[in-house]
Picture 1 (cartoon, protein in one colour):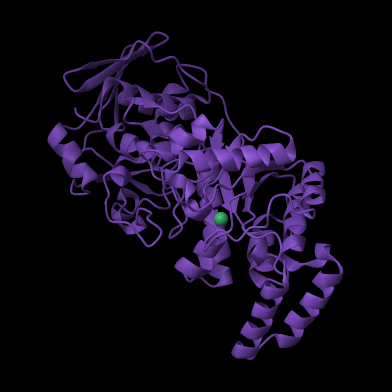
Picture 2 (cartoon, helix red, strand yellow; picture 1 turned 180 degrees about the vertical axis):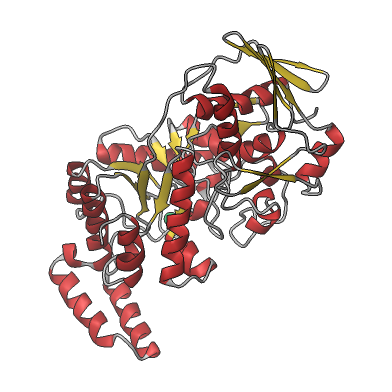
Length: 431
Ligand SMILES: [Zn+2]
C-alpha cells in the first residue's frame, strides 16, 4: 500500500463524501483492515473494497482492465474497477458494502499521481496529456470522481441528509498582454506581419491609429473590458489574472506600474470581478520569483492576492503548490490540460491537491479548469459549431454532478473575433 496510505484514503473519501453529501463529513473513524476500508457515518457502517497492490501498479500504468457500468442517471457509461462484475452496492441491515473499488482511481486522479510519475514532458516542460491516465482510460469527458460520488449519494440519500449545490460557470481570464500596441515596435511588427501575409493591412492600420489616440480602444485592452462587462451581464463570477513578471521571451506583459492599469483594475472591481496573480513562465520552480511577483501585485493593488493561475499552465506538481501556499495563495485555477478540455483531475468540484512529501492534502484549493479557448481551435482543431457543442455537452455533464465549469478565455480573442461571438458568448447565453 505504498501510495494508498491511511491519509491518502481518507483524503480521497473526504472529497467523495463532500460531493455525495453536499457537505463536509467527519471521517476520523476511518480504518483500513486487510485492504478494505471501514467507516461509520451516523449509524451506518460502510465497507469499501480496494484492488490489490499489484492491480494498483497496473492501474497506474493503465494496464488494468476496467469494467463498465451505467452512470447513476444512465447519462453515459463509466469505467470502474470491478473484476468480479458484482453489483456495486450490497445492503445488510445497517451495513453498506461498496463492492467495486471507487477509491484507487479517484486517488490517482485527484492527487495527479500518474502525472507526478511521468517524466516525458512537452516543449514547456509540462506533462503530456497523452501520457495521463485521463487520456489512456478515455476519461477526458467523464468526471469520474464525481460520478462515483453520485453513486454513493444514490445509496446514502435514503439514510442520511444530503444537500444540493448549484452549478456555476466561472469566467476566468489570463491577461498575458493588456495592450496589443504598447509601443512603436509592436505597431511596426503588426504592420510588417500584415504586409507579409497580404491581409488586414487596412484594419491593422486603423486599429493602430485608434489605439494611439485612445488606449481604451486598443483591441486587447478593450477585450478585457468586454470580458468583464459580459461576465457581469451574464451574472457570472469572474477572475482576471494579471502577470507581474519581468519581460522575457514568454512574458510579454506590461509593466505593472503602467498608468493604463489602475483605471482598468477599478473598472473590473466595479463589475464585481476578482483580481488574481498570473505567475510568470519561470515561477513554477522558483519560489523567490513567485513571491516577488505576488508581492508586486499586492503592492500595486494595495490588497491581498489569494487566487492564481500559472502562465502556460506550467506547474511542477512536486513544488509549485508549496510555493503558492507560501505566498498566501488560497485558490489555484491551473489544473487543466492545454491539449484537451474536460476533467484533468476527474472532478468538476473544487479539490485539494495532494502533498506526497507530507502525506497530506495541501491547504490550497484547486478549482479545476474545464476548457480554454486555444484548446478548441489550436489543439483540437474544432470548427466553431463543434467547439460550442463540446462546451455545452461538458456543461450538461457537470450540471448532473453539481460541479462548476471554469472557462478560460483570453482578452486577445475578443474584439472582432468570430469565436468570441459564436462560441463564448453563445455558451454564456448572451447571443
Ligand atoms: Zn498566460
